Length: 609
Image (cartoon, rainbow, N blue to C red; front, side, top):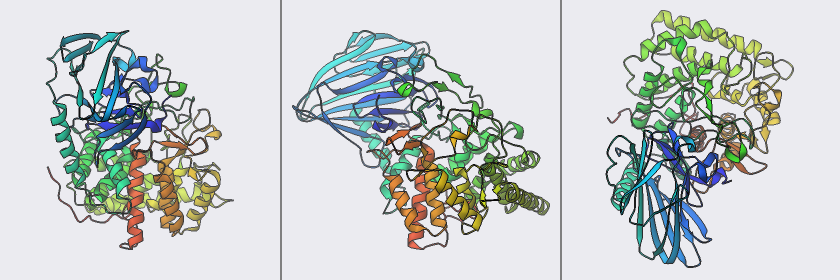
């Protein structure tokens, strides 16, 4: 098993591939993030698809991204010499294209290539043909990939293999392009020309970042990861490029994250805006507006990158799963759940976008009015909550608080009528009183996971961050203290107490990194700046050697868990870092990076089309 932390991500803003330290691409979905994987060894074995390109003999390995880019350099140092393998994808190309460039740095190194193409998540063996001395095609059903390289290839045991030697100064390209099998082969891509073009692309994008030290490096890597998880044609951003990486090894908590969650909206928008990426923020809010358009009762918590609603969950029984973690799932049944918090996320996103000076989509006012009318009729209902509980519905406190956020933000919008402002403010007050009456453990004086429960939930850390109560409120302080007592695991925060059985799943999972960043933010708002800084530094140092974070982390086993790389973790890092930086500079009384209760206008209000 290759550990999750051993992977780096390359991408072209339409899909992404995971490359291991050993030089194997073990995950790639085509033609987009949620398409079928042609390399699925991540969730199985090499026989389920992989592309290995590495020295034949043992080597010492170092990796890094080339500057601020998604161009990944892996250097293999062997007894006979050193070789660099450069991996990248080509943004903006007509076909999804992976380029692998082998360059001799010193001596002579014997290399091996093993290409195992298996479409449909490792299930479909393609028909492979050699078209000419440099071109090989693999076709199965609607899918076609074309490999172009000057190296002689040979077929053996349903694999395509090669052996070659690279000397100092030699450069050997491998270019793999995807296309539809009923069309002509994808065009030829020159590896060196594409490397130069892609280098310019990422350098130009990174140059727009307005963040300075001390945490610019980790913020920039997180921004690049978010960009790599974005789907350029529509502006949607997937939660992760993977499915079914487990929240606990060998367990069933394995979900498909290759979709766009509404609840990521506000914090993603803030991350882009605070770093100077107004265009990305604008594209994201327009994707959001298109996705949620329609009947309010049909609002989903997630959509595909195109805004599609049908995300039927299916189990792939032919895949053994990462470290034997079954089932392997594609699709996500949680798309059909009722989660009240998304209404607050939508209203908050509209507020942040307006305060930033972004031009609202023309239908946004009408959509908001319809959604608020619908929320008025359903906010008293129990729901599945932010963690997408698959057990019985509960009156989750976080869900009710975010319903309060929805009415509170809309009541302060300049586009509502006086009558609407009065009604929304009244509803916000009603929900606030309801939560304070039923969402608190009277004995301990802290907020709890759900009405009538005595359990804690990390989502309660959001209460001061969204302005429900100030951070110095006695109930908030007590809640943070109880979360520290019950949910901290070796200094990191778990989402909730899984042993309670509330989610109808076996107990056990890692610490949730986004929740741990929320504790950083809560500490900062409470004036515990030293604690906030210590926890942030620890979290930032959990990133792997190329700066990527997973969804969860097991502090006892010291391993990454969950889908990878995780957008929510990187968004949380960006906003926590910016909040701490602004607090340290004392340029504002509150951290605007997380002040979604009262966002202020950003200085740059123009967007580039």
